[in-house]
Image (cartoon, rainbow, N blue to C red; front, side, top):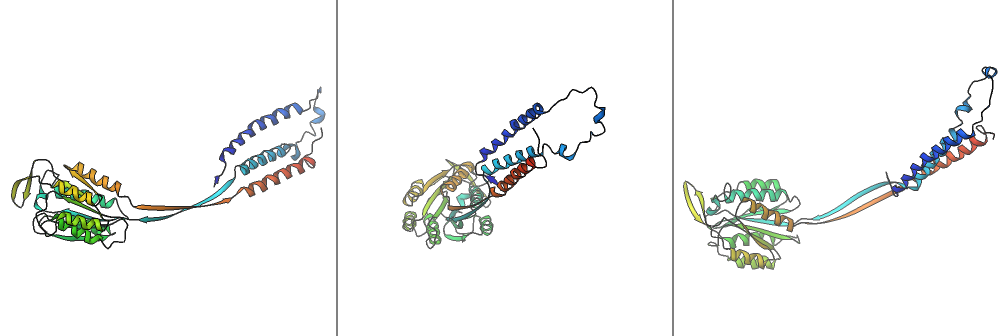
Length: 324
């Protein structure tokens, strides 16, 4: 229960001066007699019920006033229900799994850092359909679009270097991602493409794949990972020094053609911030219709108040009538 006009409940404080006025009036109206002795009245000095009940009409009046104040405040029962319609975003994560992703300028490696951040991104978007495409010298779909994120996370965890031939086929990875999204009914379709190199494999040029994505209205966020300079990578039993060779110009053009954005990550923290930024930019549409039903509850209070007033009037003029 709640009140439509709760501020009127402060009027209940007026009962305090009303009680004080009644006590003062009662003291002034009591009659006194000067007697030498009260022995003659001791035998009949037995209080009756009417004596104890003489203040009852005033109590009835106080209760009636309190109930009328509650009536003015409009007590109501409120039943609220929300009807939500949400539209998720279809997202394909295209992940580079080439040998250079084993570089240790990220902790523990670029690939493992990318997998960890991607898993957190997936957990934060329970309403989206998300798929996973991996690419190196070739590309294949590790997981199609799905809302079963438990399966998706398991398949993401299985990603490792060596699943496909080495190389960096950015165009092929992007084209494969677009192929997964082109038949989607969602009005918002996104590819998050993460790589640490430049295109050197595959039959599809990166910009050609970007134009294909743009024709389907698919946004592409590109992420280049790798610190500046050289990085150490352990590939098999060999430790190699590899140079950071990110084709930032091409990645920027891909993002521009598709109304996306290019990001550069140089460590674990910046990579996490990039995914957080993408998460904030790609919020799914949600429409909430709130239905509120109110039921007036003042009538019982008003009825009891009028009954108390009526009872007070009857008692004052009959059984508890006082003679001035």
